[in-house]
Image 1: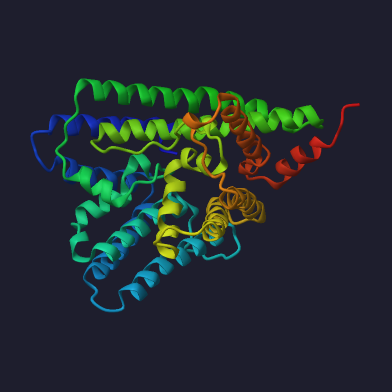
Image 2: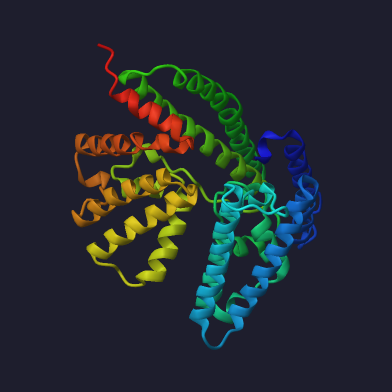
Length: 383
């Protein structure tokens, strides 16, 4: 996490100042940003630098090949994506110590689950647009290695990033002010709120729990991860925009979502959008039937669960959300138009959605012991 390291923050501020001072040079955003991205990784970790240079070069060659491939395009498209997925899964298994090798270093996993999604998005673009998708190596490398969103997103779309790359570096006073306010808000969430909330959560969950305490911890942890991840997103969006790129929003009032389907369009929005765009595009390029949409909802949510971690808890988390979304599709209840229903109905649907999320969100703690301890507490009545 760059943003809790003052040296990293100062380095990004320095880069923004350099971009502002060289705004007369039309290619400053492209050339200087690549130099910054590479130097940043090199200083942070030589192994991480070497890995990402090789990883980016390999995928850029694959990207160019797919742009020009005249035959067996779909086959090569699937192979290139499969190689990335297998590679990332293998490295995660090394990180879990399922496999061991002296050359493996956990540092290479930093940001990899986010960057592989960007690599796959670029392959989709190459597959569907062919030679028109060709991009200079300089811009492709900046897309993969973009430091503000490197470790935890938001997930950048290849097409949007390339469109921003073509624009000269220009920021007005209002944009700078908004970006700085966004960074300060994110820092407050991450450093003040999350630190305090984590301490309280850890203290409470270590003791014997009763029903009301487990319920409190579920709600508390839900708020904690919201402030944690939305805080990171705020900082990344602020720094990204100060570097001349329009970083997409990751949280779009998720607590006002009247269905679970709409919740996943508003919570970690770039991740949900990525899976919907790429899975639906691959398996159902036409408007799917309710049954197909339901099946794809389960598949997408299981993949999102496993994307967060290779464990049966994350698998069940994804399956649980997928089944609820599948039922919403089958029953025609996947969306609610606020303007066409009563306020009471809309608020009740929002409350139901938040209840569905709250009972499962504790999975994000990443600890089976913590998860079971809190769930067991639900059935431990204080009287």
